[in-house]
Length: 199
Image 1: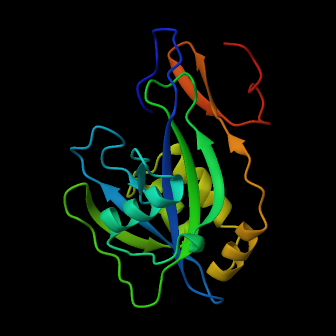
Image 2 (image 1 turned 90 degrees about the horizontal axis):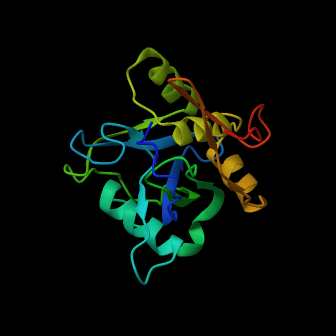
């Protein structure tokens, strides 16, 4: 878990965007994950969806397209190909906060992902279950938002079905909370037990 905020002041989340890149058409569903370098200040060594902070003058779609190209070498020609899937806001108890839109899109024809070798050091195509199982074995380091998204993605039988579902989805912001019990911290989502308990 990222460093908790102990100052009492809640920081403003920085706008960010991530891309859930999928392939498989109507037959199957695989998602692209990239591994962040162990030297990174944020989520070092974790396998994540390509993405990052929104730069000045960008909106979330422009940032998503730029990050996908920078981190995975995939160029999207049309911002409209990005379908909003979810919006996650880092808990207020965490020091480094982001307000992240996750977009889903299919791998464009003729494109082949390639890592930059500096910010990202590896990549792989996984079914959601393969990635979650690898995490359970300790073979892939996954962070909480990635795990929760993979659990949702695993409900779809194909890439086409996922994208079609996302097109009709109303995106509501999700803001997890960190619950501290003694020395133990756990993350809860809206609707789960203890979410509304004051800490």
